[in-house]
Amino acid sequence: MSRTAAGSPVSRLRTTVGDHRAPVVLLVVTLLVATALGLLFLNTAIAVNSLKATQLAAANEDRAQQLQRLEQQVVSGGTPAELAREARAAGMVPAGAAAYLVVGEDGTVTLRGEAVPAEEPEPAEVPAIPPPPVAGGGD
Image (tube, rainbow, N blue to C red; front, side):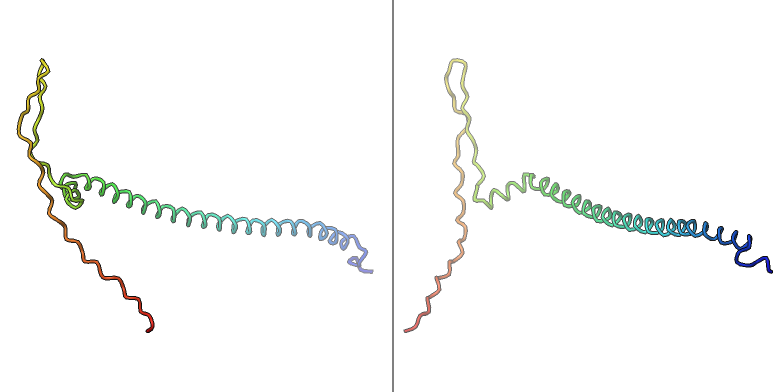
């Protein structure tokens, strides 16, 4: 009889070793698959966060530029020339020479200078108002 028969010690050893290898191989394969899926998930999460960060940085840059434009408008709008132009557009006129009242120690009041009234503003052209539409009705 051959020593490598089904009931021989060598064949039982191979079966026993094979039986113990299957769970270990299955565990290793499971760990490799889980690791690969975990890395894929982390890579996707990092890519999404990177995209969000890029979008937020672009939005932040837009807001910073808008803030600079608004600050420039405030600075340029506060100049005397700009204020005078807006006052004229609102129908205001420059004041004439002013007179001052000076109160003395004894309570007497003295007028210094001569008050001059402001000039009348030039009448603005009023656009012609079109006549109302004629209601088209049947005869």
